[in-house]
Amino acid sequence: MSEINIRVVVTGTDWMGSGIGSVESALEQLFREAKQEIILTAYSISTRADLLFDWMRTALDRGVKISLIINRLDDQPYEVTTLLYQLADTYNHLQLYSFLSADHADLHAKVIVVDRQIALIGSSNLSRRGLQSNHEMAVLFNGTAAASAASGLDQLLKSQDVARVPTPENHNLR
Image (tube, rainbow, N blue to C red; front, top):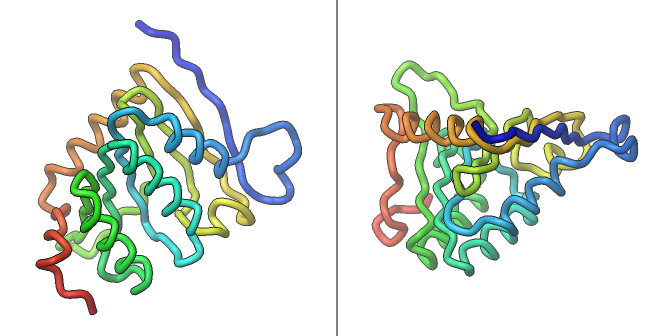
């Protein structure tokens, strides 16, 4: 069994500067170091998550496959859905999925798994506040636990509540 390294990262002024790493820096590093695949889930993405889109574009430029499962994609801000559809139109290795539960449950998980080897699971939404000013906490870990997180996301992708979003040219934007 491989050794598992665990690190806590945070956001919020009460925690920052205390020697604990930041969620934002951890996410940036994950996107930068990804070699093959990124799987991430999001409850919400805000229009002020410009860094996220920059990190995604940089990884996509390197050929990294990204699968994004987002809660009720079409209920996200128009600017966010437009940008995501434009990215998916430009990069065929960006796969967008919408979580739409028949019983109106939400996908509230905030997870990113990179190359099935390292994962970050925490409370931050993909927004400027979630990555900087809210008081959020996440755990960054690797090894078999990260592979387990990836398997869990694989199961989610197969569920009846998750649908792959059609290619952008076939999707009617609002």
